[in-house]
Amino acid sequence: MNRIVRGLLVLCVAVASVSAQHKTVMIRCDDIGMCHTVNMAVVQVMESGLPFSASVMFACPWYQEAVALLRNHPEVSVGVHLTLNAEWKNYRWGPVAGARAVPSLVDSAGYFLPSRALLFAQNPKVDEVELELRAQIERAMRSGLHIDYLDYHMGAAMNTPELRSLVERLAGEYHLGISRYFHEEDVEGYYDKPPDEKAGKLLDLAAHVKGGAPQLFVFHIGMQTPEMNALIDQNDFGLKEMSRHREAELRALLSPGFRRALDDQHVEFMTYRRLIDREGLGAMKRPQ
Image 1 (cartoon, rainbow, N blue to C red):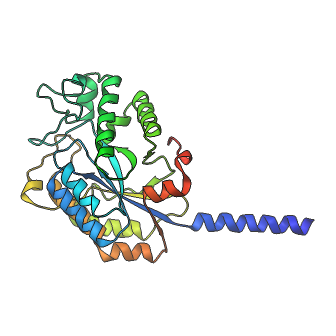
Image 2 (image 1 turned 135 degrees about the vertical axis):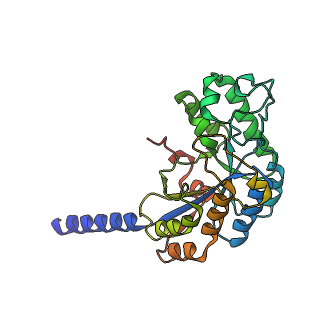
């Protein structure tokens, strides 16, 4: 009996060791549909064959182009990038539900406010937030795309306990996952790096991926075009020369070195659709 017990203990330790060493990488590209330049950038990612999840801003003017492009790539896992802010100077968008239906969420011109601080300074009503988030989700559902998950632009939709509970309730109602609710760990350190340092930093991070929980790389891609050059983030924390940053993230993501560094570690590439199919929505847990 002692031998059997010892054998089982050794087996359990071995299984735990293998599980700890297993490396899973998730790539999420945000702000798809925000503008034409971002949509053209995501086409390059789709054509690369790299497994990834695409978070679409269904409140933005270019979402219909994003939908048309994503229809050609059903392998991409699509999420709704819930937005309650429009941060760019001279390029604004408003609520899908209409400004009159959600007056506590908009400025005097009917647009979303540029920052979380300005939004919450005017005490947005939870029932109006629900109306708007529901409108964004239902637009996504009607688009013809297979929608897998929700996440949140600038964190606004999760900014308070009441709103977090609201998003969780909507995810349950529409049978959707929520990004970061599957024990994912964010890989950080490249977003605010100077553009000419992003590729090197990302390569270093990719070469040292941790085992265990899925490692989530979140990208804000684009290209340095006149359209993107004209965009200025009105938030104090907004990066200057955003077009250079987004182009640099795109090039770093598509670089052979990034893919090679991950392949050398035999990582498993995971999308939200595959994760939900494997673990089920019941596996979700509110992060700490």
